[in-house]
Image (tube, rainbow, N blue to C red; front, side):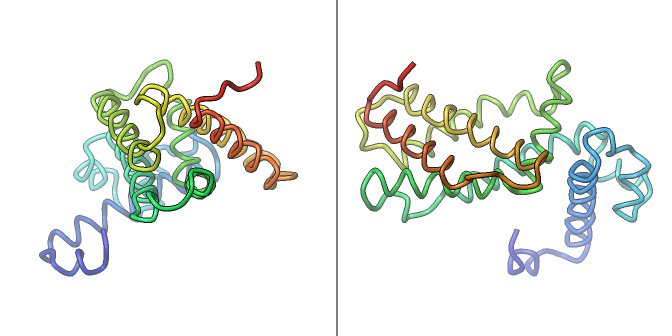
Length: 207
């Protein structure tokens, strides 16, 4: 939400928005600093400067906070990829820009926290997030159509190109988390761009 939007809210609504942002930011920072286990109820409330009762008032439960972070990550990704400029230029230039924007999002603390949450909940999926999966898949298909709708690929093939790119960028992000930096980062990004370009042109990658 922008500053202008916040200014249009009533005083109580502004307080609620600020409190919710404090809580989400507290959880994101705790996870980035110490992993998923670091985001305990006591640490969340202390970092946010609120009582746990106040935290529950705004979100209901820790599961609801985690689901809100996943939703925020999806929204940020969608906003980052949404641009009139995305439909302009050659296919190669669009792929370059698309991958760079994805990488920008994947390097953020928000995405790192998102991945930690997904890994921690893989055996017990967050109930509050389950209903969003179908909606997000449809949103990703719309994003790919907006950028690469002129390719002779159906939605399934476009999503396959996105998933392939997502997988490799996530791997790079994990290396960055563990190593602090990525050796030959640009070379890796260039390979991912070439691979995605080949897929969008309907060419098979080497096995």
